[in-house]
Image 1 (cartoon, rainbow, N blue to C red):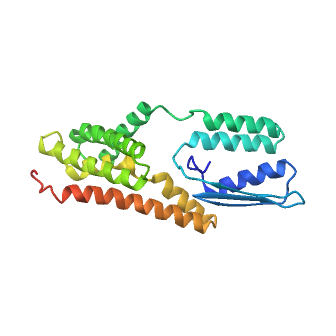
Image 2: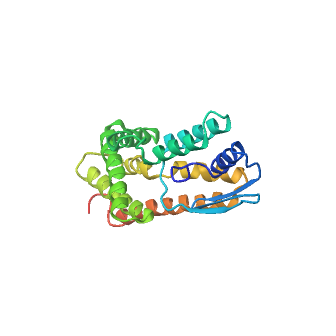
Image 3: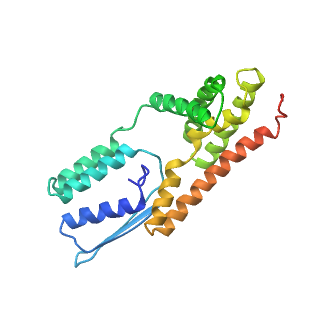
Length: 236
């Protein structure tokens, strides 16, 4: 659930529910964005630490794991059945195909550009550049396992494409096109989870996620600023 974008308190609650359903009423969990520590009181107690190295957004997987935990708590699943379902879910590709994500990112970019009071004449430019933003960040993250670096390069590509679109006459409002096109890179879910974790009292996780979101915003802003520094408003 943490690898797929779940909230910290939800992960802790899920583990506690499963432990209670298995007869382990006294259990303790401590979850951060990069690790999970879980312990059970008793004569045969043990503590496990799980490192979280990859994080993405897959709310369908979060929902499925949440559903499995509820079915365990209600006695509808045995431990072995639940383990089997979780293993199948771990290897299953429950997310949307990339072409669907690409289309949604492109449409969202165009719509955000309109929402920011852009012109309909710039919709096509924001549509194409928004799709390029998602493609770029996906490719660079596959190439280099450094999230900040991939987001920075994707923002540079968005800036370059937006300037070129205005320069060749395919777009009019450079600022609105950039605003709409960078939306696929904006960590909206991360910001939301950071606020929810802070409200729930998970200050370490909330601050960690907030810092990660701030770094992403810094990468996006730096990439766009880098391009605009070489663009004088009428051409290169």
